[in-house]
Image (cartoon, rainbow, N blue to C red; front, side, top):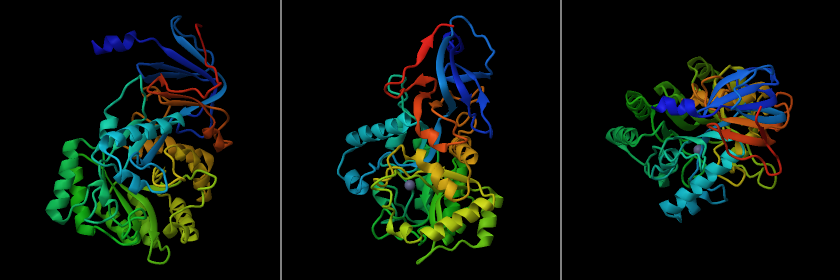
Length: 413
Ligand SMILES: [Zn+2]
């Protein structure tokens, strides 16, 4: 019955000047992308003909590309100068509304999939499960409250535990709640007073327990880790991903060559925190980051040259320079590390989708993939700023929003 309903839905055909498919290093010219039931059915060149009842959408002069995937943000933080204080001051109902607004903002800018790596009260899961064509949201992958230590980084999100039984129970609780990924704060962080980024919170043994328990439940683990010791412990424990990976020490940055090699060989997903809104807030990096910037950039270059699996995420929500659509400013940061436009685009689409466990559905425009498609003005392989000239966003085949003033030409063939 469901299949009949799906087949009965009309075909939509997007016709544009060019297409970047999420994995190639060149564009397809004059593509036609056929969509039905929220998925891409086929990608054709210019000469195809389509059924008479297909809805033809002309996007002349524009380039189609997969929706962006942000594998690290926080819908519960409001991108103000005091996200922690503001969070403490509102109840869950208001927080739900704000999180939905944050998700809508990301979607309008072309971020069609987000991975929330730390919420309060599992509210990102509520949002994830509230899909509706009438109020489209990005596809949400969610961790729930990050597992942390009492008083540790982001303890105020409600995920503080201690002891072997505590960490095991925390993983089980998240599995029962239906999270998509386990997030653990392996080291301290910048957002939490009294927490030092370069210092470990969980040791190697606790991290191993968390990873083993999560994998037993079929869940991946990504570990927030700044200090080199925490990075080593998390990688050795078998974590699937490392967030931030800054290799901070008490007074600088130190990334041993042997660790970089091990990371590259193991194919651990290294979540790079990138993207800042330009303007007044652009220079407001946390002091611990700002004072180490030269060392951080040098380490990123070494990681990039090592062939490590690099996944750009924004950490949106944590400061005024990090609104929830800030991922679109990532390519410039990636270029500083040596990454060219094509690889930056792969990293922000197909590779990020894989890191989120959605590599089979997201991050590409190809038959069988979800119809999460942007129409942008320009060739992103020549000019990455084109990803910020979004003229239309489709999420699961639903037109979310054309930019005001831009008219879609919808006509019969
Ligand atoms: Zn974060």
